[in-house]
Length: 123
Image 1 (cartoon, rainbow, N blue to C red):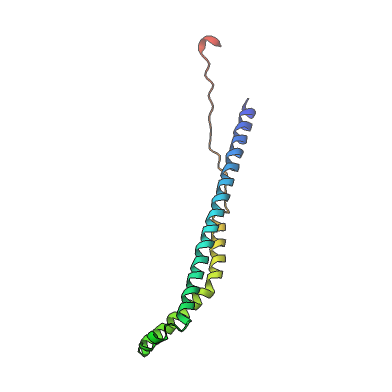
Image 2: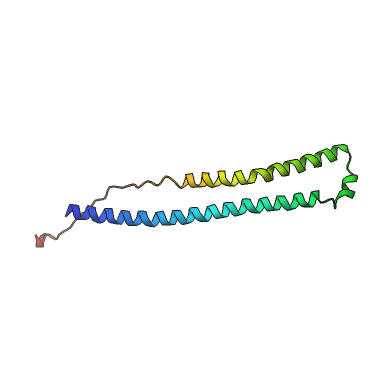
């Protein structure tokens, strides 16, 4: 009887493990998609902003800047370009970090006791 009970417990543990694996895989996929989408949206937003800033439509406003403001503006443009160049690497890094968090999946068994109670009159 003990081996049948152990087999039943092992089968149930495997079933629960498989269900959790599927849920974790689904969750990991959704998180990766969301992360990739967010960073891609950021990249496109930065690209659009750089296009606007470098289009020349704001040259009149730039003419009003003093030397220090003009240098700060150029530094901001350079920082946006650097950030734009880094986003693809950031996407890869963040996806790898996410995958690593979902990599370790241990199975833990906890002690179980089964007690069979038989009324005294039926022994």
